[in-house]
Length: 313
Image 1: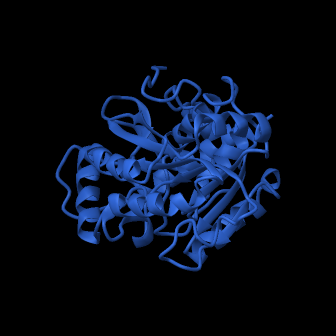
Image 2: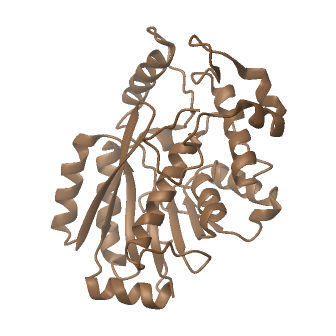
């Protein structure tokens, strides 16, 4: 098995998928597994059903999640990439905790836009025992996320789901005065319009199939709230950055995925104007796709040390 060197060293998915083990624990996967053009056992990653069945098997085998499902049309996230985000968050915290990853429910994260898949709280809890508050404006998504929790005994009481009742807010109405959060996590809508999202999907699926595709196939799914918003990811992260100032002393790290490298300087400039004391950009890659996460804090070095010594001790 070849090593996917782009992934985080702790990522359980560094090796190529062991389809024998995956099929053994999730037999339905067998119906979509075949030999690809290189003679390797694989799935058709442009097929939404195949992607979903692979996710179910990966979550079952590696993260002890026996039940996981999402409604049609909702985002079906690639598990290795989502696990990478969690591992890099762990490194970020460890860098300010004398090199040790803080574990257990004393660590509290906010997943902005938890979605129907609930993937980040699942991975963060199963990997490091972290507590989460998952937020969303979509009641259907939250209902499905709760169903995943209810149907996995090992997730009972693991984290909290909250509805964001004002679609114009991201943190307001969620972060209360008595709470301290160690990080926020966010997979923002990357596109500024439905047209842009469909064009991106056409390019992605055409690359996967190695031929031009005329009709978009959302192989990883996604509804309008998950795929696009006014201003695209720059608009979304700018809103998050501006809201974060009000919670500067209540959260150690604010973070978000950034899909487009060209957006990093724009977002960094905004964060500097907002007087962030530290800004970090962490490159991540999976296969041919490269993304990055941006993290910022308003805490001074003294405040950072005090946070670790009191909250994570």
